[in-house]
Each structure stands twice: as structure tokens, then as C-alpha cells.
Image (cartoon, rainbow, N blue to C red; front, side, top):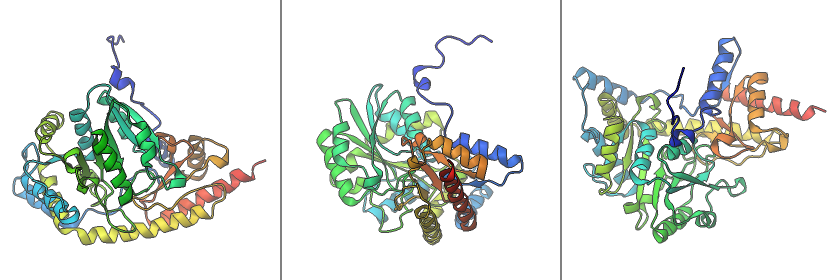
Length: 396
């Protein structure tokens, strides 16, 4: 078969096709089909059901014939619910008609921002560890990622001095993710203030990925957009996926300066047109009425986090910090004398536990453990991990 010349193009050539989270999941599922007992701790997918009122709202929308296109910017009732949420929780005055865009999940939301804001060759500063899709989407936008490592010794929190050193005349955007996937790190208010000061000084945009905003084990979430002079240079990306356990509903959103909205809507229109109408109806109800469901879920994740932390502390040769948010632990396994990928493959094949190497998150030597399973499954998975580590250390 003859392939036309110029394939792949320069953007796709910069996107790795293997080695990510889904590949690990695929191997785990293949072993499962062979009859192996696998503890899945690789995918960041809440195991709770979606809120009942959201499901009932989607059903009612379907029964009412709400099966057609919505406004390209999203159903107005959902946009109003999003605006109300940020007013209630962050003190932001958000215009539902001029500052909110409903997207097909946060993945599309982030890509729309990158395609709308960036010129080819622009630089995006991304603190590491980071969600792997950032690298792919920056490459697809024709931009360049500049990675700023956030050391475990500092709790994986971005240090503004390191951020300042990464800024060049090509820097256009800082991409923040707090609470962070995969480290669970949370930027404190003083961190946000320092980053905001630099963004104002250097005239930079900030894209704030806040998909895990409710997954905080102490305190409350604070968006950088609420700081002085930041609303006009910040875009918030979030979704219903994690907070309300609605990953399959594929509804996300952007909150942005009103001048940017028409261009972001046009980009979104030409990528997906709109999110599913009946799903949007259910999400609007979740935003307004499901706070109790969310609180109960976070309480259970706190219990699971504490279990994982206890096992990690009891496992020699592994270094870790206590995650402050999200639902991941991100320990360092470098002292075991093997790469993170080798350790993950050994763990999967020998002990039937599926976790992800930190290389895909920009942090070699680390592994990500997702505690999105039942308490009993997590306990069994952590027991197997400890067993594997002790066996490796006992080798001559």
C-alpha cells in the first residue's frame, strides 16, 4: 500500500502513539481476559454512580424530546448554572451569555483554548508532573511545551522562581492544574498570588484546569481567576466528569474573558458543534443540587487516600508525600533500581496490579496510583505492591 507524501504532518509527528495510560489499561484488560485477577489502579475514573437527580434530569429531557442541537455555546440553563456556581463559590461575576462555553468534556475545552490563543511556535509553560494530554494538545496546536519540574521535596508545588526562569519572549500561556493530576498537589493562595503577579508583569495568559476542584481534603478551592487583574487573562477549564462522577456524559466548560468567547465558540463549533443536549440538562441539575453527593464522595476518597498513604509509608524503598487533593498518589520508586515502566510491567505481570509509569506525566522514576476502586480492592492492590517491592529488594 502506498501512502501519500507528507504523512504524518509536523503536528502529529510530535504526538507519541504508545506508552500512555490507555496502553497500560489495554494490557491489564488482556490479562484479565486470560483469567488473571487484576486490581485496576491506572485509570482516573470515579467509581461512584452519577447523581440521581442528574440521571432523572437527562431522562426527563429525553422524554420531552430534547434531542436536538443546543446553542453552539451550550444550553442556556446549563450556562446559567455554571455562572451561578462561580459566583457562589468564587465570588466571580460571570456573564452566562458572554463568558461561558459548554464543551464535550474538559479535553475539548483545553484544546479549544490552545487553538484559539496560540500561534505556531508559541510557548506554553507546563509544570511537571502534568496530565499527558497537555503535551499532545500543545503539539496539535503547533506550539511548544516548556516544562517546569515541581520537586517532590516541595510537595510538587510550582515554585515561582522556577516559573520565572522559564519565561521567554515566546511565552504565551501558563497551564495550571490544581488539584494536580497525577501528584495530588494543591497550589496554596500564596502560590497563586505569586503566579498571578508574574502573569500580569509578563502579560501572559493562564489556563487553569480545575477538573479536580472539589477533590480537596483540607480547605476549599480557590481559582487564580478571582485574584486582582486575573479575570481578564485567565481561562478556567472544568467538567462534570470527576466532581460529579459523570465521565461518560462528556460535558465540560470554559469560563473566559468575554472578548475571547466568540472565537472560542467558533472553534468549538467546528470541532464538535455542541455537547449532547440531554446530558447538558442533567449536568445543570447536578451543579445546582448534588453538593451532598459530592461531599459524601470526597469523604470516602479521603478514607481511601489515608489507606494508600499508610501502605506507602510502610513500604521500604518508596518515597512519597501525602496528596492534598485529586485521587492519586505519586510515589518515587527510583531506589528500587529499575525504571518506572519496568516496575509497572513487573507489577502487572507478577502481581496483577495495574498502575502507570510517571514518564508519561513528565516525571521519570515516579508511578501514579489511582485510588478510584473500592476500599477492599485498594487494600488488596496496595498489599500486592508492598509484596512485590519486598521481593524485588530480596533479590541478590
